[in-house]
Length: 465
Image 1 (cartoon, helix red, strand yellow):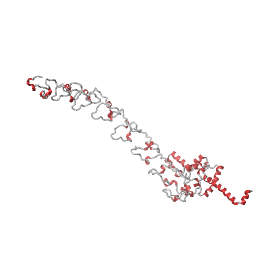
Image 2 (tube, one colour):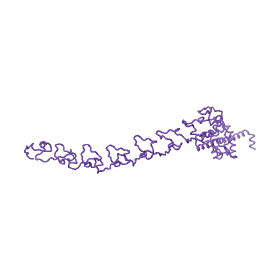
Image 3 (cartoon, one colour):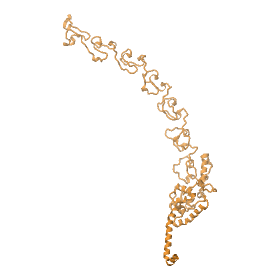
Image 4 (cartoon, helix red, strand yellow):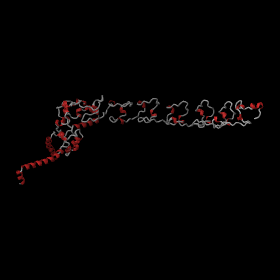
């Protein structure tokens, strides 16, 4: 009764109370309103999970769902809450399945972001020319999220009566192409059967008579003679590259310099696999079919010295081939078997001579000009190691040396020692009666030092010693 009396006596107070209540409710509703506008709210219903996952990986992942599915403006967003409420009721009262038909997306929503799209001509497709022919969504129906029937099936929300989508049809056909061979399938399956459905285009164009280049601009150089895009790419939703099963490699690939001139398939057995993984089955021993020997290379079978054919040209010295087959002995070389001094595989300059000391040196070595005759080992004691000279200890010097003119005596050992140089001879003058150092030598040796005479001082009589 007090409240009723207050309402009758103070209507302004009642109005204020109502406004305060409404304001409080509105203030509380704003955060809720904003939260329900976010993409994360959509997946509170599990049937939206495939669409949410596809949106996160699509080109519009930075655009909220309501930007495409609700007209702009606060009033339109408030009106959409009635539709959202019905979907919420359906979630609890029914079992929603998809697809249930394409969502309606008017062009006006697309043009909020793509303002100048209708003025673009483009090198292949002109939006300006096609403006008004069909709505944006007819060509770009999966721009926000490309959801396959497989994803809906995994989520348990696929309608059992749903016909296969263009994507699943294309996937199945591509699998058939892979198993049957690309070339055969391309010649028997029409483009319209492989390509994503384009009703907006086929109203005016026969898809089977169009080439890929009619609509698509290749991001790479199209090699001449390849037969167009379909040589490697299959018409469909994706331009996944599939290497042709029957390629002429030279059409697309240029071999490196000095490459084997034969067919690529000789070494590269898996078209489409990296060329560096070539598996070369080297079986033909006639290396010259593919390889040219370097200048001044020896003749004969390559495998004689190159044992790892097909892998490396590493040299391995043969052990069963005569040296003279490959090597020519230098002039004046010892003429016996090479193996007497040289070891197989060791550089020739490192030869170790197994010298036979029982042989006459002259059989292999020639004396220098003016060299004395006789047995070499008389003076060269290190035969087989070096030609170092060792003087004999014999006192018979005349067997090798001739005395110079007017030389004293004939017994060399009187002044010379075999262990010293000739210039360092020590002369001991014979004892005489007179001191011979008191006058010139020619008084006693007028005819040279090989003889002496006393007649210079004593006349013909001699006169003492």
